[in-house]
Image (cartoon, helix red, strand yellow):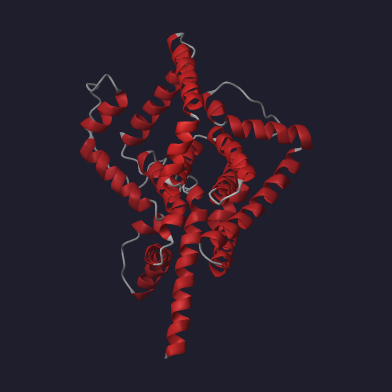
Length: 350
């Protein structure tokens, strides 16, 4: 932080929103220690947002449990204070989800304005923001009556069409004039790094482990002169195995520990599987109780992060899984609340 500066490297461009925020905080507070203090405050506000989101989508008991889970799970605590960009991004993402849920209520014009601003900023905060934004749009469209969407398009089709045409014209000019060449080359270079340094080596994580899948890759580029498409298609069988292993790895490193030899191992594995079981209970309960459609934003963001980890890679410290964890906490909290409520009902009737 003491030597912080903003350059034109691809990583700095992709994290433009975060870099601008950091520059603003350093300009306001002068010292890195003050920025870290702000980070701690923002991380604590995330707990409040988790509580509010769970309370709106489900009930107060679920909100309390979700807040406690988010507060005491070590992985969440670690990444909330260890990396500035993760801490700020997750808080911004939770704020966008909260504002979106509120914006769907009638008479929330000011909330919708705040939602638009925060969502656009999230897209420039870090690359994952674009993926999350896509899920927010999908949820918003699914929750809005189709007649309202059609009405908006009919009333404002000139403005929307003009905006789209302007974007296409600007993009076309930048592309044909070569202004985007450095950015395109950077993307291609990073894609090549991922394919040849991660995929080709059969890595599940961002480094070599005992769980990798070794194979002899085919580097032939014969599909539309595309390095990415050619590599994926020509190596589809080993790539499918890698995707499957990453899906298993998403659960945690414990998922590989299948050498069960005694009752202690059974209890350990059962304890590790408990959150997954409660998550499934919460999902089924939400569907049966008619809450899944309203709360589907939780599963959409979890799915987005899951696909990101499977298609690229999961870092060995599970940092890239962190954005999904607040929403996992809410679903698990709802499952736990349903189990507790069911237990109380059985005890009362018994």
